[in-house]
Length: 132
Image 1 (cartoon, rainbow, N blue to C red):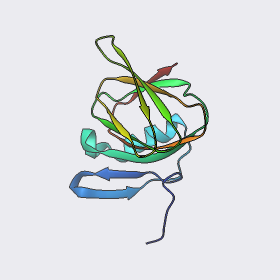
Image 2 (cartoon, rainbow, N blue to C red; image 1 turned 180 degrees about the horizontal axis):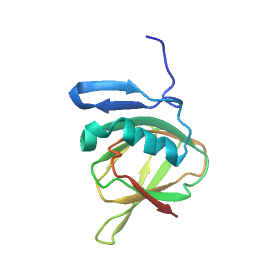
Image 3 (cartoon, rainbow, N blue to C red; image 1 turned 45 degrees about the vertical axis):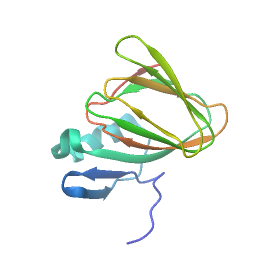
Image 4 (cartoon, rainbow, N blue to C red; image 1 turned 180 degrees about the vertical axis):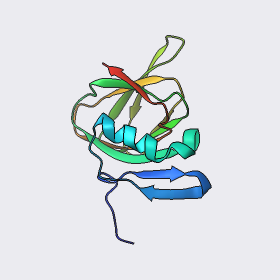
Protein backbone atom coordinates (compact mmCIF):
# COMPACT_ATOMS: atom_id res chain seq x y z
CA UNK A 1 0.00 0.00 0.00
CA UNK A 2 1.34 3.43 -0.94
CA UNK A 3 1.29 6.56 1.21
CA UNK A 4 -1.65 8.81 0.35
CA UNK A 5 -2.42 12.45 1.14
CA UNK A 6 -5.48 12.94 3.34
CA UNK A 7 -5.74 16.48 1.87
CA UNK A 8 -6.34 14.98 -1.58
CA UNK A 9 -8.00 11.67 -0.72
CA UNK A 10 -10.23 11.67 2.37
CA UNK A 11 -11.02 8.33 4.00
CA UNK A 12 -14.41 6.76 4.61
CA UNK A 13 -14.78 4.70 7.79
CA UNK A 14 -17.63 2.28 7.24
CA UNK A 15 -19.52 -0.65 8.65
CA UNK A 16 -17.49 -3.68 9.59
CA UNK A 17 -14.50 -1.50 10.60
CA UNK A 18 -13.70 -0.79 6.94
CA UNK A 19 -11.58 2.10 5.65
CA UNK A 20 -11.78 3.27 2.04
CA UNK A 21 -9.65 5.91 0.30
CA UNK A 22 -11.91 8.34 -1.52
CA UNK A 23 -11.48 9.86 -4.99
CA UNK A 24 -9.60 13.15 -5.29
CA UNK A 25 -11.32 15.80 -3.20
CA UNK A 26 -12.64 18.71 -5.26
CA UNK A 27 -14.35 20.76 -2.56
CA UNK A 28 -17.49 20.91 -4.71
CA UNK A 29 -20.95 19.92 -3.51
CA UNK A 30 -21.17 17.20 -6.16
CA UNK A 31 -18.14 15.50 -4.57
CA UNK A 32 -20.08 15.25 -1.30
CA UNK A 33 -23.23 14.04 -3.08
CA UNK A 34 -21.20 11.32 -4.82
CA UNK A 35 -19.60 10.39 -1.49
CA UNK A 36 -23.03 9.92 0.12
CA UNK A 37 -24.17 7.79 -2.82
CA UNK A 38 -21.01 5.61 -2.72
CA UNK A 39 -21.52 4.86 0.96
CA UNK A 40 -25.30 4.96 1.27
CA UNK A 41 -25.38 1.46 2.80
CA UNK A 42 -23.40 2.71 5.81
CA UNK A 43 -26.09 5.32 6.53
CA UNK A 44 -25.64 7.21 9.78
CA UNK A 45 -22.76 4.99 10.88
CA UNK A 46 -20.32 6.05 8.13
CA UNK A 47 -17.64 8.65 8.91
CA UNK A 48 -15.67 10.90 6.57
CA UNK A 49 -12.12 11.65 7.72
CA UNK A 50 -10.58 14.69 6.03
CA UNK A 51 -8.03 17.47 6.48
CA UNK A 52 -8.64 21.01 5.31
CA UNK A 53 -6.49 24.15 5.27
CA UNK A 54 -8.08 27.55 5.77
CA UNK A 55 -6.66 31.04 5.32
CA UNK A 56 -9.88 33.01 5.74
CA UNK A 57 -13.22 32.69 7.56
CA UNK A 58 -15.70 30.16 6.19
CA UNK A 59 -18.30 31.62 3.87
CA UNK A 60 -21.02 29.18 4.90
CA UNK A 61 -22.57 27.31 7.81
CA UNK A 62 -23.03 23.54 7.96
CA UNK A 63 -24.98 21.14 10.12
CA UNK A 64 -24.82 17.35 10.46
CA UNK A 65 -28.25 16.15 11.61
CA UNK A 66 -27.43 12.45 11.95
CA UNK A 67 -24.30 12.37 14.09
CA UNK A 68 -21.40 14.02 15.84
CA UNK A 69 -18.38 15.64 14.19
CA UNK A 70 -14.89 15.80 15.72
CA UNK A 71 -12.81 18.85 14.75
CA UNK A 72 -9.10 18.65 15.65
CA UNK A 73 -6.88 21.68 15.08
CA UNK A 74 -3.52 20.60 13.68
CA UNK A 75 -1.94 23.95 12.82
CA UNK A 76 -2.80 27.59 13.52
CA UNK A 77 -5.87 28.74 15.44
CA UNK A 78 -9.51 28.14 14.59
CA UNK A 79 -12.56 29.70 16.21
CA UNK A 80 -15.62 27.53 15.66
CA UNK A 81 -18.93 29.33 15.99
CA UNK A 82 -21.84 27.10 16.98
CA UNK A 83 -25.52 27.93 16.73
CA UNK A 84 -27.49 25.54 18.95
CA UNK A 85 -31.11 24.55 18.22
CA UNK A 86 -32.24 26.43 21.37
CA UNK A 87 -30.87 29.68 19.88
CA UNK A 88 -27.77 29.77 22.08
CA UNK A 89 -24.50 30.76 20.35
CA UNK A 90 -21.09 29.51 21.40
CA UNK A 91 -17.53 30.08 20.21
CA UNK A 92 -14.88 27.40 20.72
CA UNK A 93 -11.26 28.51 20.17
CA UNK A 94 -8.91 25.70 19.12
CA UNK A 95 -5.12 25.64 19.15
CA UNK A 96 -2.93 22.87 17.70
CA UNK A 97 -3.69 19.56 19.40
CA UNK A 98 -7.09 20.69 20.72
CA UNK A 99 -10.40 19.34 19.49
CA UNK A 100 -14.09 19.86 19.98
CA UNK A 101 -17.13 17.78 19.19
CA UNK A 102 -19.99 19.33 17.22
CA UNK A 103 -23.27 17.72 18.34
CA UNK A 104 -25.88 16.62 15.79
CA UNK A 105 -28.20 19.41 14.67
CA UNK A 106 -25.84 22.26 15.63
CA UNK A 107 -25.07 24.73 12.85
CA UNK A 108 -21.39 25.70 12.77
CA UNK A 109 -18.94 27.87 10.88
CA UNK A 110 -15.37 28.99 11.56
CA UNK A 111 -13.16 32.04 11.70
CA UNK A 112 -9.42 32.00 11.08
CA UNK A 113 -7.13 35.03 10.98
CA UNK A 114 -4.04 33.22 9.72
CA UNK A 115 -3.51 29.91 7.90
CA UNK A 116 -4.85 26.96 9.89
CA UNK A 117 -5.36 23.24 9.32
CA UNK A 118 -7.93 20.95 10.90
CA UNK A 119 -8.77 17.25 10.80
CA UNK A 120 -12.48 16.41 10.62
CA UNK A 121 -14.22 13.14 11.44
CA UNK A 122 -17.75 13.70 10.23
CA UNK A 123 -21.02 11.82 10.31
CA UNK A 124 -21.92 13.44 7.02
CA UNK A 125 -25.13 11.67 6.08
CA UNK A 126 -27.80 14.34 5.57
CA UNK A 127 -25.41 17.28 5.97
CA UNK A 128 -27.01 20.65 5.28
CA UNK A 129 -25.42 23.97 4.39
CA UNK A 130 -26.43 27.60 4.20
CA UNK A 131 -24.66 30.88 3.34
CA UNK A 132 -23.03 32.77 6.17
